[in-house]
Every structure is written in C-alpha cells, then in structure tokens.
Image 1 (cartoon, rainbow, N blue to C red):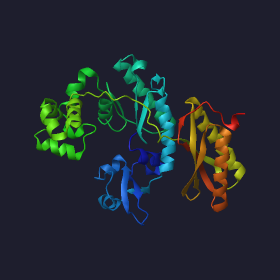
Image 2 (image 1 turned 120 degrees about the vertical axis):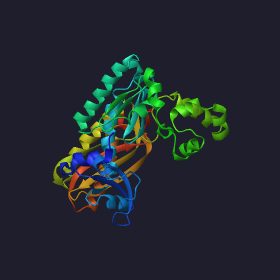
Image 3 (image 1 turned 90 degrees about the vertical axis):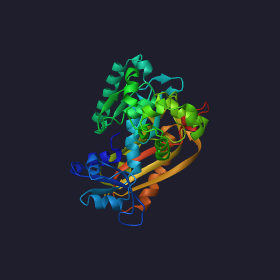
Image 4 (image 1 turned 90 degrees about the horizontal axis):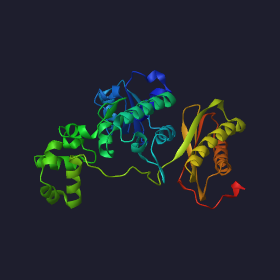
Length: 356
C-alpha cells in the first residue's frame, strides 16, 4: 500500500488533500514527542522520513499536518485490503498461497492462475489495484517477479500507484545496476561491510568470490548473499500464524449512546467477521471492540477466551459485554464502532455449544 496510514487519513478527511500529512507515533509526553510513523509524498518532498523525530519533521515543514497513529482503525482497513488480496492467490491444501508480512504489504503466489504467464500476471496486478481503489479508495504499488525477492524489489520501482513486472529474462538487467543496499534483506550494517570490500553494486556482489563472502559473513549468510545477487529466492509464499487478525469498523447512522442502535451495527459487523472466518475455516480466541466517539477519540478493549470459538453468537456475547463496559464509562456519544478477532487458528473437530 502507498503511504498507508497517511493515505487513510487523506481519504477520511478530504481537506488534507494536497497538504503535507505526517502520522506520528507519539510518546504520550505531550506535544510532538515521538517518531514519524509514515507521511505522504508531499511531506517527503520536505525531507520528512519514517523514524524521524516528529519535532524534527515539524522544523522541516511547519505547515505540515501532524496526526496521531490510529492503529486499530488502520488495522480494520488492512483486514479488508488483505481479504481482497487473498482472493486472487492460488489455492493450496492449506488455504490460499498468501503471506501478509506487515499491516500494508503481502505476497501472493499466482503461478497456477497465470500458468506462469507474466502477461496474465500483469492483468491480475491491474485488477488488484482497481479493486482496492474501487472498494477502499486507496492506491497500492504492485511488483511481479519469479520469486518473493524480485516481486518485493519490483514493488518499489514505480511508487506510488505503480505496477512493475520483472520476468526471468529481465532479471539480470534489473538487478545488476542497483546498489547492494537495494537488495531486500540487506541492512545498513551489511551494506557498509560490502562497500568496505569494494562491493558497491549487485553486479559486484554477483561476481564476487563466494569463499570470501563466507569467510566474512559466515557460511549461511555468505551463500545467501551470493544467491540473492543472482536473483535466487526459493522461500515459499505461506500464511504466517499467530499475528493475523480479522476485523470490521463502520460509522453509526448518527452519533449516539443508544445501545440498541449500536448493537444493530455491532451485529452486522460481527456477521461480516464470521463470514470471513467461515470462508477460511478459522476460529478465534481474542475479541477486540473499538469505539470512536464524536470527539474523534478512540478506545479499545479486548477479551481472551478460554477456548477457541467460531460462532457469531459467541463473538456477539463477548462483544456486547465489552460494549456494556464502554457505555457505562462514557458520557460522549459514539461515532464509529469496530469489532476484531485475533488468535486465529484452523478449526478442530470439536464443536462449540453455540453450534447446537
């Protein structure tokens, strides 16, 4: 996704269009104490970068709009984007050949769907971009290659809103002119060490003696460096367990504290979440409810279940308990409500009591 957090903020508030937008992970110590999480391209023109102290970013562009990170909200958007991406991946015995690597990035294996045809892959990439733009009003940049390494690097070539295809016959001409620091998986320390060895470009690395690389970086790392310089990456695309979440968030018809109105929306959101779980035969152990009030303050509460569950009734029971806690504590009307499940795992044979 392109400048994901800032892009969502622009979408939510059209008045931000054309302005430098900086999303900050604030420390809570007041003011702009904290670091830049992400920023849009207008802000980047001022030299603002992720990881930079927010106070420094403010000095670089005093006119920029600084916003706090709304991680739960961004996660709910991410969940919907990931469901779109997953629907395009090849099917496997374990599910989709899909691997989410961060809140805004994922790999898809589409070899079967395309029959290995890179022209067909380009069409799928364009379809993905169009569907995300149509449903979420956000842009993404797509990289297509013979493996994860090349696809990842290709995705950065035409940002924002780009698509780049690197077929096997273009692999050498794509890689070799690049600096070694552009190789995915090489950090600043390794890049500096390689430069000290006279290795500046990926071509230099590809032509360097592997024994020398092994003596400097160790056997595993040395061989890996030699392989990636040749564009070799055999790592499979597979779902990462443990950290994935599925959620939905929506705006209430009106700002309210009416439990009936809020419960109606919660019921609909829970249905959407359960349908996603059903399609992948997943259960959940963690339930999180998010509320955003009329003053745009966001609050979240979570509950962890004793056993995995996958029924809508079980989800709503916990969600309504959490909602009751929120309502007993709040004097300010709610504007948006969200529900999210985590601790996902494949369903076992045993049924929940709610299935009867």
